[in-house]
Length: 123
Image 1 (cartoon, one colour):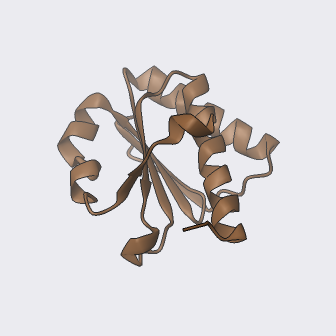
Image 2 (image 1 turned 135 degrees about the horizontal axis):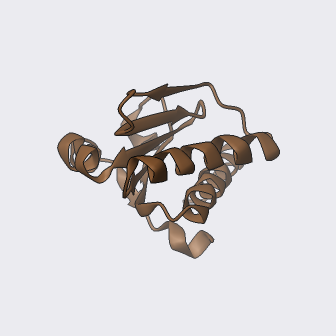
Image 3 (image 1 turned 90 degrees about the horizontal axis):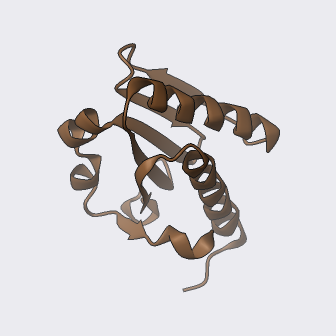
């Protein structure tokens, strides 16, 4: 089934955000399609960082690049301990985890009904 124009725009934004996190060597990025789950957001992007400075570098790059590309951010949430940062792009949520927090919260399992998108073909 072909994507609507709106869905294509949102997916392109998700791919651009993936490129931002890959610039800072985010680990094990996953793109989850939530559209068929009748949920608030269309996509989750989940990735890991290997240290607190790495996590913060990914976050800072995403914020900087989002501004450069006029990608609007609704809000961000930081846990204060640099283990999990959430960036809300209205229709896409980016989760940046420490490796330990990602294993603990296991969002991929929690959202196992969501379709994993093979994003590498879009880069």
